[in-house]
Image (cartoon, rainbow, N blue to C red):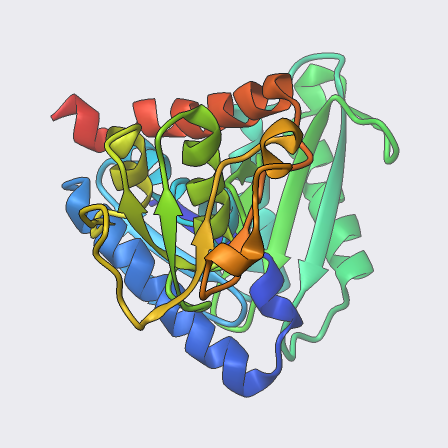
Length: 287
């Protein structure tokens, strides 16, 4: 059965204590997103990886891609940890994916106490794919292959896949404190999303783009203008360089952040297009 392998990005740079805490937060956020999108799935935490089993893999992918902190996703077939089992499974996996006359290569990595190293694993898997597809005249090209197979041998299972499906990466929401964002236009909307991507829990003032924001934070809090909380660490504004001349920090008791201050309007539209693309593919919108 195919499963999803999830990778995070910046969390891996932290020490063990912080990494463990942020991994738990990321898992909680993944589960909350899947629940909000109505996707039934089992999420398992591994060593620097998460594994997701779901009956509807595409719905799970479209849901999880919205979770900040998830760097990439791969749809994998699994195998055992012995070289013979891995080669047998990768050979079978390749039969429906090899194309006559096309070149291929294997990228392998090993994590654990296996009796082989990554290079030996790649060589053995390459031989298995070659022998299983002799009728398709296979050719090897290690630098620019037409078809690429990835093999990750981990302590409990081996994962075989071909593609990386990229998410927004960043940090999990809830790891970097609370901020208040003024969202009245596209630039303000992008500013709020970028602060979410940096791990902030964003409270929103304004009605613009709430449908998009709720896709990325199912528990989004909208507050009335004038209401303020001591929990806020800063205020987020969607201002450009022309508007910054009117800004005076002395008017505020908290730091003010301008995530889009250096962006042109075209850059704002380009970045928002990707956020909207992920939001529009959400399983929640297809229910």
